[in-house]
Image 1 (cartoon, rainbow, N blue to C red):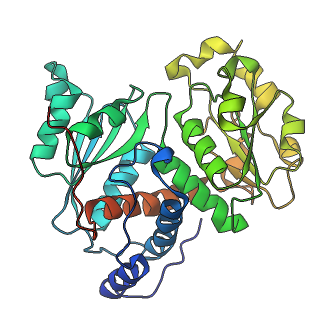
Image 2: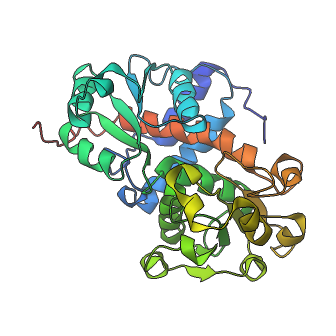
Length: 338
């Protein structure tokens, strides 16, 4: 993890970010799927996040006066914290809602709750839910920008963006690189976004897991290759990306036991050696040590980029909030009020 930051003042950092942005906006008003983003959008996000990361702990005023609501109807640590910290870092007023909110307990619909939040003047609503497709439905009814922070088994676009930034930081590009993803892709929204973005950026995605974790036709939909032999799948890989078995979503019933799974698919130093010499090791967190990967590989191994992913998450999520909350093109988001 890099702690190197620019020596610029907060004002100089803001000016540099504005110059890099150069009045450019994203082609979309919401980010609920990687499919919403063009390659040009992704390049703009990565370019700004590179500079955003250099600002370190400096408090910037790029979102001063903006209101961002983090509506997390499902538990989260890394994603919720990084969105909140990134918003505050940029000067926004951030408001947090949880699944235990009064409106949820009283039976108010997600649509009515979201429309209420938008009526308070929220420029951005960051949303996490157990229901796949909920952000895509709700974005039609509010003028606020919606950022999907994870919806059911579907997608987690900001995670995929920080992941490709981590890959680019090390390899310089995603194009032509082999990314081997190990683990529970059926119940993983991270997989849903990573598979889309790797394909969009010209990389090759391999998946290795028990066949019980393979959704029907997934190899055709995302143009990926499925393996059951982990050593074969890791051979020649530029990135080894481990996923946890998501027992809270019922995945435990798809394997005999976690210990049995770990014996066959857990990342060890010996298995990691099958990847390219310059390969990196990634995980979206939380890491289940000695199940997903050997404990010593998480932070002590020089190939691990787990903490770099965390740091890149702050930069990416701040970038998304800034780009969506402050548009230069003057266009107004179309939405349905009923």
